Image (cartoon, rainbow, N blue to C red; front, top):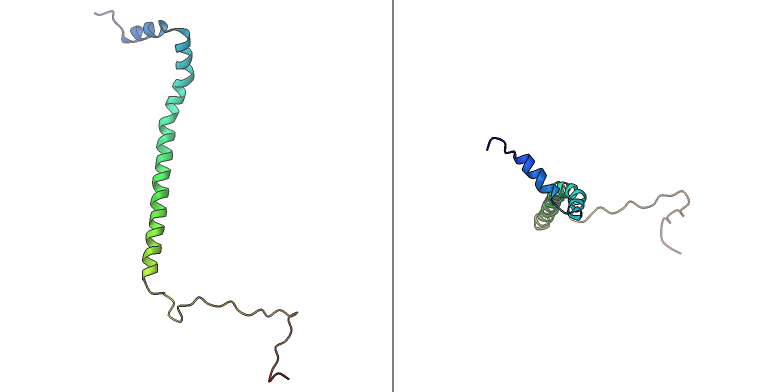
Amino acid sequence: MDDYSIWQDLFDTIQSFPDWLKLVAVLFLPLLALIPPALILILTRQYFAYGLSRAAADYAAIAATQPPRNLRSSRPAAAPPCRSPLSSPRRQGPRQ
């Protein structure tokens, strides 16, 4: 049992494979090495994206149930009137 080597046994086993199986192993084993890290990255991104969207939805639901924080008015502020030099001046006094 002193002359037994697991690596030599593995090498002999691989050499006994048919050529098409060796080709498949050479072409697809690197892909199998890349798929798990990519899958982990994709699942992690989806998990955090779901968490952020869920947090935004929870914040919106909480904000909808609370009174507005603007103490002056609950309506949004109106846009200021246009004061372009090309616009006609406003009339003062009653119409004729």
